[in-house]
Image (cartoon, rainbow, N blue to C red):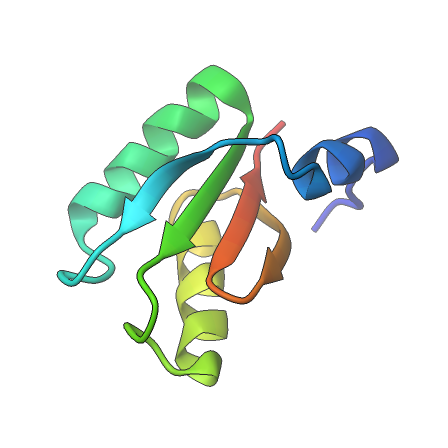
Length: 88
């Protein structure tokens, strides 16, 4: 794992970064992984949001880590049901 540059950290935590991936009631499907991969290629920093109540807090941590692993990206930061992924 590489360390995440401060500039990326700042961008990731910026509230103006739009959510471009929503994870709905079908959960973590292959389509979500493929979509995240595609977006990471074109924009490097991607914010994802899970519908409330879909996962417990622990499951959510696992879900974010799973997505990062599957897309060989890094989970820059996660708060509640929102996470930001980065691939350089």
